[in-house]
Image 1 (tube, rainbow, N blue to C red):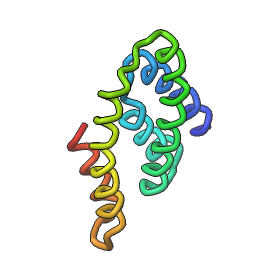
Image 2: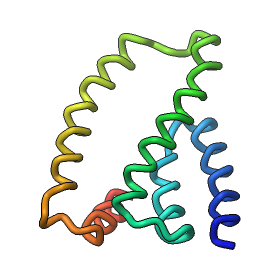
Image 3: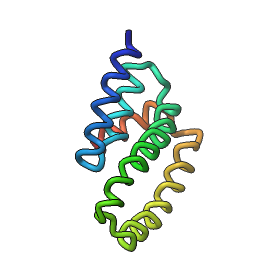
Image 4: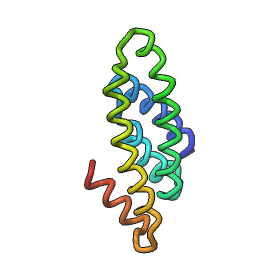
Length: 109
């Protein structure tokens, strides 16, 4: 039953991601961990795949409508890469426990 609830919530997450352009991982992580029972480290990695795929598919109609500013998106994306690599390195340090990651996530929310 948790998987059914999780999948229904995932539909709502996809809807919010497309309507608002964000929020996918913020909403997906607690659903994966607390509803579907996925370990936090796996859920964090899974949200990257989920949100990346959904975002790419959502990009297509915006691209066709001319809503995408490639220069701005490219600069923002490149700048974000540094933080992404740093976060991945920090998450794999031995003293960074899953509980700490979830507390950090809650604090950012």
